[in-house]
Amino acid sequence: MSIDRRALVRRHTVVDAGCPLTVGNGEFAFTADATGLQTFAPLGTQAQWGWHTMPNPEGYVLEDAFTDYGGVGYPDLYPATPAGGWLHVNPHRLHLGRIGFDASGPLGSSSQALDLWTGVLSSSFELGGVPYAVETVCHPERDLLAVRVAGGAAIRITFPYASDGWNTTADWDGPERHTTTHVLDGSRCDFTRVLDADRYHVAAAWAGRARLTNPAAHTYVIAGDDLELVVAFAPGPIADLPSFDQVRTAAAAHWERFWTTGGAVSFAGSTDPRAPELERRVVLSQYLTAVNCAGSTPPQETGLAVNSWSGKFHLEMHWWHAAHFALWGRPELLERSLPWYRSILPRARETAARQGYRGARWPKQTGPEGRESPSEIGAFIAWQQPHLIYFAELLRRGRPGALEDYRDLVFETAAFMASFAADGHLGPPLVPAQESYYESRRSVRDPTFELAYWWWGLETAQRWRELLGLDRDPEWSRVMGGLAKPLVRDGVYAAVAVEPYTIRTDHPSMTGAYGFVPPTPLIDPETMRATLHDVLRDWDLDSTWGWDYPMLAMCAARLGEPDTAVDALLMDAPKNTYLASGHNPQWEDLLPLYLPGNGGLLAAVAHLAASGCFPAGWRVQAEGVVTMP
Image (tube, rainbow, N blue to C red; front, side):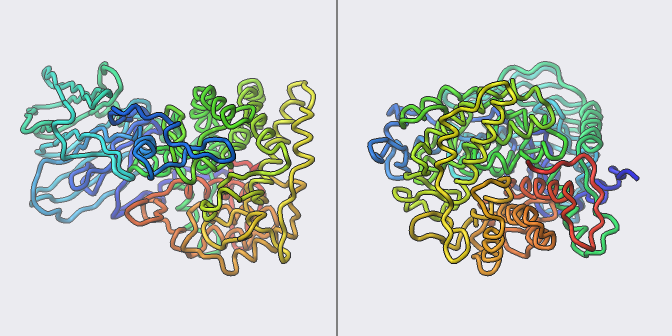
């Protein structure tokens, strides 16, 4: 019997989460408080195109942040120099506008529900003794929010200046640093926003009797009875606006289509008491990654909800955000972001050539322009390089035409990888996935995870050549054959091949060499089994990250240990907590959500479900999910 998908999704409706909730479409998102808007906190209103750059009167360029490493400059002068500081935080993601109620007084009794099946957030509450009933919904294809309020209400729209802070999107204290102009035409108002050299447009339209006022700079209030308001954001002028009902109908159709196509996994009927919680995490993670991680550029680690690292995306995290889409039968959501790599290919080639390599070297931390951000860590990380080959292979498994579509990106990536490891070693300089080693970047070499991933990436590129009717590249074969073997000490894999061989904090990345990375000749399964259990014995869990638990589960699954895999996925650890909203917080207020954890969970569950790797006590119904390669 097929899964009742409506029942599966609806039993995880988010009710009274007590934390912010987001509506969105992958390109645009709006995060709301208990009022269904942003009345009490300037939560995120963000779009993939919404970036700002502070003035650069000194004309800083990346070379101004270089330090010499063996005759090659790497941009690591952050925060040591003004140039490094400016380049690190620019461009930064922008808060497009705060939308909340223009009311005072305490929040009284409240209830709230996010219906995942329709994408509608319903909020009921008292504010200053006045009852409110609010519906909030995002258009599935436009950067547009729609709101319906029963009874009388005044909604305030406020526009901030940009912020280049680590986790802030807005500066509310500099009204003279930006301009907002408006043109009122009946029940519609168009706003033009100018922040230094950047500009964007906003349009608001309302149904019913309402009045717009402009009580202060950058502040507008729309007041009326039974207010229906739509607000659209765009980099250019905005055309006609839909009604609230049109947006609600479109959103409901979109989300029903999302949930009824692609993969589904149900644990109903399981006797393991943890099954309902894992199912909840899976359903909510599908929603959160669709809203935050399915856009035209790689996502930042906190998606479109709040900034982290100034809103920039981390390409080594792109796999954890989005690879699962292909495993859950939604490869088009992964594929949306891949043209961005081609757009920065010239810059990636320049980076490789400047460092003395062939091919294209992809950045670690960047904005839409593709420039590396100066950092003592980011410029030295390399494990994002094979990701693009992994993405392309995931797509090829379901669509052979991907061979022609992505052959250039796969081969440019492989050319760099072979050149980077031409002497059989990885690094130095190098910072491995286990970033505890960043201070040793001048000496670190041959991390276990990266060695296995390098071999697999090159072998996959070779198989692509064969599928395209080409000969295997002899240089790639030479490098693969001469690649260093991961170091084994006391019967387990070391993190790196130099002292200190294994620091027991941060990511236990060795386990990713057999799990996240498919089996390769470089990794012995029994040595990896010993390594996995050595990690589980006494690793510092407080220093781990949300995607480490799916990584451990993937390793256990490859080793044929289903109990260990599920125990890892549901391990009781601070960084493996999932709130009522589905958010996987890491650093309290700094990272109130962490989407690589959600995406990693989905990848691991797809692999376990499709490969039959759940233990006794679990009743698993799986539709449309596939294993990892």
